[in-house]
Length: 280
Image (cartoon, rainbow, N blue to C red; front, side):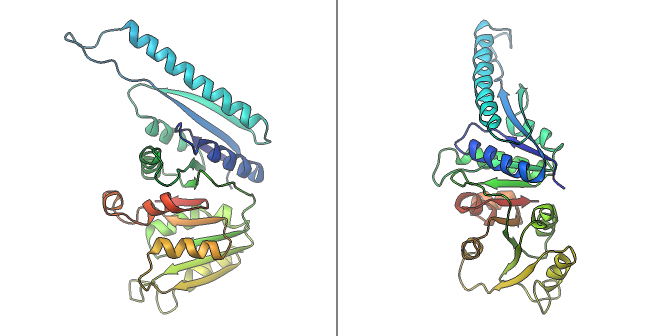
């Protein structure tokens, strides 16, 4: 059961989409929603005699605190119009980056909900950095909501991107509370490897049987990879299936390789038009 949702604010365009999605799910699940509004106080600039108290820095801090309180008030007013129980928590950090502050609070929740960015948006680097830290260091799954998406709860149709890997297994089982409420779940394998260390003679059959024992209505879909990128195959199937959720394992390759050479995780952050649940 999911009873605690955390939504970190990044001061980007996707923040409100994340709040609205989290509120919709919180109402459905009877969960509590906590919005984290970070106050990132910059360190004073060292002078010739080291760091000393500065009147100008105090003024800067007050401006930053005031701006954060204004944003927090806006979020409270926005959520007050909905039915989800919520808290907007203003958290100051001086020696810690905001993404690490959010990571600490995420460890006390069942699920992190964060907003996305539009293609070629200047918000992209900040969102990717936040996402990376939260996914790799919080120990919590992340529900990533595209900034232009309007969530419709409950989830009726879901797609699970399956490979017999640690990341995919973790994502699937983190997503079970959401999948149990779905009317249909597609287990989608793209280019399955039929080897002793792969998926066997019937790819997807074992995991489908496992999910069926949980009471899920499962369909196994095999997409033979024939030049089409994995991300394209996943998103095309989601569109054809009218899916409301995609479940994937995040960072199956190293984060460095994903960021420099590209990978499914990075491409989904950029191109997905439906919510994606990532786990690592």
